[in-house]
Length: 199
Ligand code: SF4
Ligand code: SF4
Image 1 (spheres, rainbow, N blue to C red):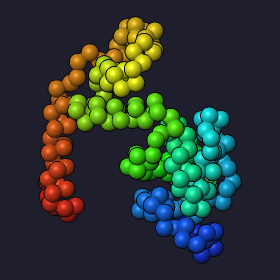
Image 2 (image 1 turned 90 degrees about the horizontal axis):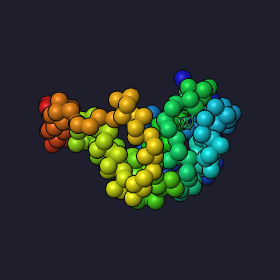
Image 3 (image 1 turned 90 degrees about the vertical axis):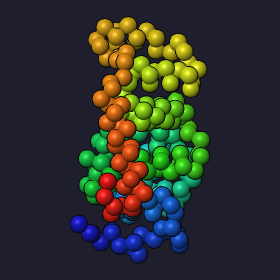
């Protein structure tokens, strides 16, 4: 529901600030950062805020002010686990988890180096794994990560308990692999025919 604070005129703190790409992308994704009245409920509920350099509240404010570089170069967007605690707590219904996700994608597209490289490496390998196997193939993901980070012995003590609890699959599922092939094929057809085209 629109409120008085929803009026872009009322909060235009810097001429042209609405033109940043992050602002535009968020608007396209249904997130209106201008609704924020800085109550800080998001930051006080975030389980990771102590590790972040900017609180979720400050990220929202940076986007509003057009300080895109500050947001894209923050640790916060990489440390956010998308747990959505902030989103649930926000009295203005702002999807703060989505703000961090959009900023992370934008940082990746622009080649902004991640302030938390291990998270960026995990993101990339997780998506690569999903694209190939259709669902997470744990052993493959572990191997991909080790090769990317060269941390071959890190967390090795966790391997035995995880194997005993059957948390690590040794083989990918053929069904997942085939489903993902079909999905990607259909997606290509939809993209080729335009959004309104038939798969
Ligand atoms: S909880 Fe919502 S309104 Fe409050 S500071 Fe965070 S984003 Fe802004
Ligand atoms: S979604 Fe991200 S910013 Fe929000 S509470 Fe969870 S970790 Fe914190």
